[in-house]
Amino acid sequence: MDLDDDAASDAGSIATTPALTHDDGTASIESRSIRSSSPTRSVYSLTSSLRERAFREVHGRSVNAHSDVYLLPADDAETQRLDIQHHMLKRLVPGILGPLDEVLREEEGKQKCVLDLGTGSAIWAIELALDYPHVEVVGVDLAPMQTREFPPNCRVEVDDINLGMPHFHGQFDVVHARLISSGIKDYCGLIHEIARVLRPGGMILVEEWDFRMYRSVNSQDGPNASYELAPPSTEEKPYWSALAEWIKLLGFAVRQRGGDVDAAAFVNMWVKQHGQFEDVGYQDVWIATQPHFTGKDRWARFRNELATMMRLDTHQFLQSGQPLLRSYTDDHAYIDRLTKEAEQDLVDCKKHHYVRLQCTWATLKDPER
Image (cartoon, rainbow, N blue to C red):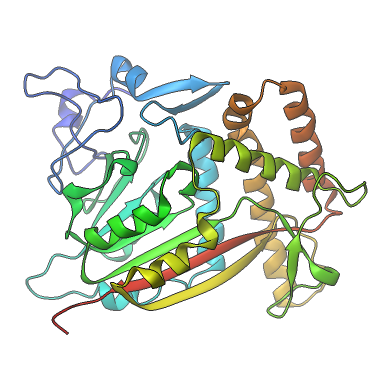
């Protein structure tokens, strides 16, 4: 997508990211990261040559060219998947935001700011900016936005947060991270860095999943249900789960590239042990990957509706994970067979799978209180 000169001069009408040019006008993309002078607004023109340096193709999908750790796609199909996922999570966990309204309330003489790490399709950042028009919202991602309409109080910057965020220290009232662990080398270190980025009294909100597939114990569901890992590949069919095996293999691929696949289980502990956070909150959210609920009440209808969205997200994720898996092993025939069987698991709806979203929020202590 090329932006003409008139469009590029109108910062309020297009998606904005850090400038990708030197002072003399020549293109500039670092091999690892693009740093910008936050929070100054800037605009780029995504020319064909610039796009070639910002993205690379891996096994048929476009991925970022700045990080060897994160290998999920950065293309239109992935943007669509992340949008669907966002709408599902927004309905599932509307209350898991901690004291967000209180932290972002308007205060005379104070500009409230929010940072969305690994913003992906940027839909979370955009919706927050629309909900809080007095707040400046900054999304950070490894790949530049290509086709997105942004409100004037929202922008996206291209950066690799594995390199640290000293240019953001002390600038934000809320830092949000959702499902980014596959691209993070040291998640505990990231928590420490987020503490530096937050202002006193600011809020951290983290939502991560653990690269495992679960099933309900005794096929029960609801607030009092218990869950266990879906059977591994060593167990004989019909109990064996291709989908669980696919997710486990993806976790191996992420770990090989340096991603922190176990972060979800430790984020809450890391936040509590950090020492500078208080009012720590936590909640597990179990999400069905197939609409298998048989009741006729409102609860069952709601769960089936969300499970249908999750099934679509999972189906698309089976394709999004192909660059990772095919870079992990040369046995592509096995990947093809396992993916096909996992897709069939979703269609058959005989094995009732769940994923686990682990949510943690807290506020940074204010020494003046």
